[in-house]
Length: 137
Image 1 (tube, rainbow, N blue to C red):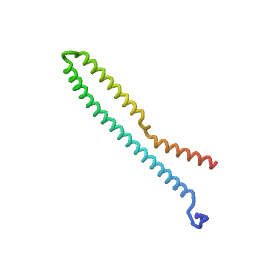
Image 2: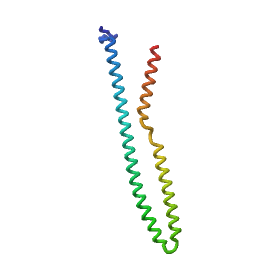
Image 3: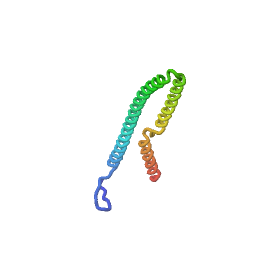
């Protein structure tokens, strides 16, 4: 069956052609969503890798700094105020630990929600499909 449009062009019509077009559109939408999903997984993997690397570097550096600073202060005040020096060093390092953990906690809670772009796009798709269903009835 051939259908002529108002501008004089002719198109093949029929149920099978419509079904093929619908299937092609659905497959293209699915492919786009899978590509977005894949991109978001990659972004999350990169973020996690960077966080882990920088956390390990910070922990290693902090451990060396703690040991060397503590030894230096204790050696300097060994004869006069060694217990005070040790107590102050403990306080400094406990405070540093608390601040560091708070920063990591904040970074973890500020990261973007995983798959937020894909979820948003799928919501838009559902909305468009439900609108087209309502307009046909």
